[in-house]
Image (tube, rainbow, N blue to C red; front, side):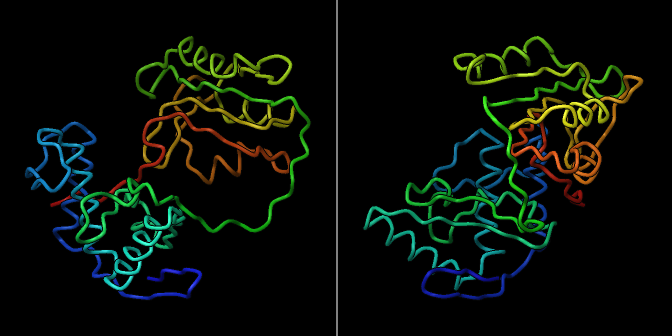
Length: 267
């Protein structure tokens, strides 16, 4: 593992995941699902007794700092954040994890050893995810006003509870209400299938694709032509739904679990 700063790089080897670390992560998944964890986590500084999800998040943050952040990097990060606090500057910390399995962990909860709160809550830290892209992208020359394609996918069968279409649409229109018309154009798509979204993107150019739907870890639940659920993974969404050469600069996904991945069950 490497930490790169303007002064150079610091390297170290993490301890890695073990039985206890796996259990800590699994307890978080159980807490998210509103199920009773296998064991109540031990409270640490800043934790709230009785709130299982908060406690599970704190436990994972401490585990990441202990097991997956080498001591050399932890010391350097602590020094950088302390210096930034003294000078009133900010540390912009980009996290890039090549291993998908480890990368799916909630690194935003990371707590440095010996500290009481996650790095992300430090006012001197600006933490974000960095990913390796496919290379340079072509510039989309879409004229104004701001053009938004709003899609609400709610299959009639096999996709869980039907979405409240009117409520979802009202929230979108309310958000752009003050500028809608002269400064913003919203097209609401009737139907949330792969084919319908693709056809709309090929017909018109948009700056934003806003997709409201149910979701599962790693999958969006769109609509099939017969009204059943169409579970679509990331590759299919980019290869089949997004039209080649008709790129949308911003895709907004409003669906549960879109930032979560499956984790092996603890045994």
